[in-house]
Amino acid sequence: MDVIEKDLKKLYKNLLLKFLDRIENYLATFSIGSLLCGLSWNLSSMIGLLILLLALNNGNVDGWSSPYIAPAAGNSYSNAIKSAHQP
Image (cartoon, rainbow, N blue to C red):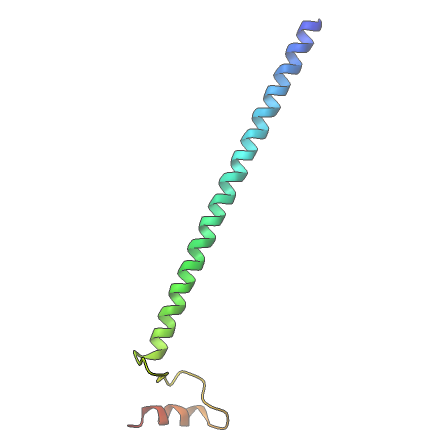
C-alpha cells in the first residue's frame, strides 16, 4: 500500500508541475502577444499622427498654412479661412 501511495503522490506531483508549466507558457505567450500588439498599435498611431500633421501642413515646410488650424484669438473661423487663402 505504501508503494501505491508513493506512486500516486509522484503522479499527482508530476501532473501538477505539468499543469503549472502549461499555465506559465500560456501567460508568457499572452504577455509577449500583448507587448507586440501594443508596440504595433503605438507605431501605427505615430504614423497616423505624422500623416495628419503633414496633411494639415499642406507641404509648407516654413510654417503652418492650413486653414484647419484653429484661428488666433479674436478672429472668427471663417475670417481665418478667408485670410489663409488670400494671396
